[in-house]
Image: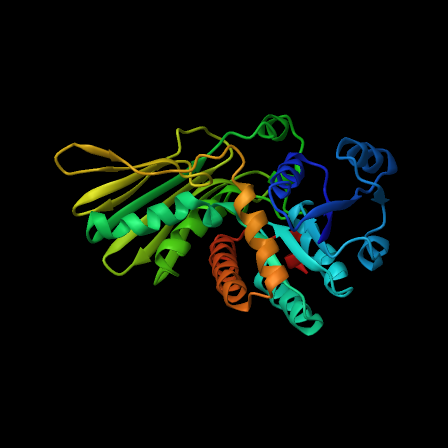
Length: 327
């Protein structure tokens, strides 16, 4: 399958690199708003077809699939453009700003007979399955803490009076939807949707969250998610069971998974610490599309919806509205 890319940032570079490990995906087209940037990106990746008009790209027959990694607020409009032209869409997290956009886009995807997938890389990695399998070894779960606290280089611009996209309600920014969705996807992938949730943000002058604590209530235990773009952490994750604690590094990568036993002993678990763990989602997405794997697709679709339901509730309960929602 030929795929095009929308966006010219580092995450697009990473997906293109990851697609090289798949036999099914061939990078065939790029889009950017400006000709110079589009031409430079196409040359960088040795791609022939260049577009500066989304509608023209969507209607083109040089691609079957599109990978979208534009600013969050543009995801819905751009995804719909491709879906209406019967192109499969792989959209970076967070897939959309709210449930209304999610439901409308999925309605169009179903109507057109194409797939709409959220690029949430961690739940496709082998380390995710390792952690899931080892949950049974640590006994009843009693608590969980999943931090993703990573100081953004753009925060300095915010402090200087600028409003970068990631801190802007115009572009559907904020810590929870940018970083918090990784540990949230991990929690929901392992344990399903919680009974209830509550969010306690640190709001910035731009009216989005710079950091926050998301509490997930499950039968028998409480999970705590920490997300921040205005501080830095080791991001060591822990899932506490009565017979041991699962520990791993970074909820986006889940590197170095291990079990710490009550006696203080430690067991290292088999792990795949690939430097670009987008290779797994690229392969799985290609398989879903090529084989028409509706069962796996529906499972991922539910996870995507559950994540967005929780982040939307978290924002609304704290008066965090994106510009597209204020009208």
